[in-house]
Image (cartoon, rainbow, N blue to C red; front, side, top):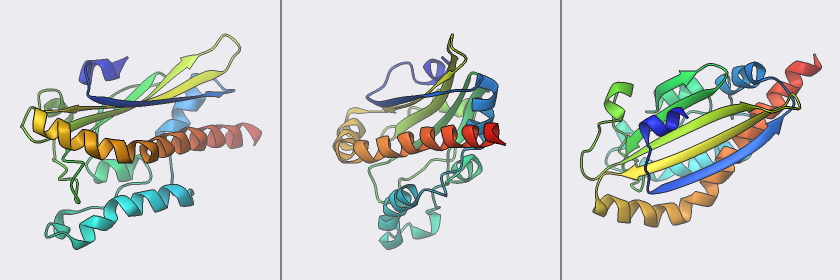
Length: 187
């Protein structure tokens, strides 16, 4: 998997999967157009994530989290790599445990070698696997690697609280993709 090229080792991870009765090409197209703006739950969770930054001295650098791929890329995610019909990998570097997240503006080529102390690197993928019955297994995995022991301790404390909500976002994303594919196929 492509995600292995970017974060082969990690301090934390979250993985979810869903079966979709469609060929990988259709599922991939829907994943590429992922839009979570229709989910009240996701909008609420994203608001809660950005809410503390409203009271931060770094307020002017805070940007809203995106509810679709373009929005995610505007908010600091970087498209690390994609293999159409198989996998897409996004990356993000920051201090996720802080109020603003302290997102670093890096390029895809800088992600792999980023080692500045005090940060964490996250990779988030969608991978597709054709099944013998004509369905596609769509899996999303999030991996996080901290750049030093102090950031690892901070992140893991934060992760204990955030992990269930992070899982809800991933599950909602998978379900949204499945609904989009099913809508398209019913037309």
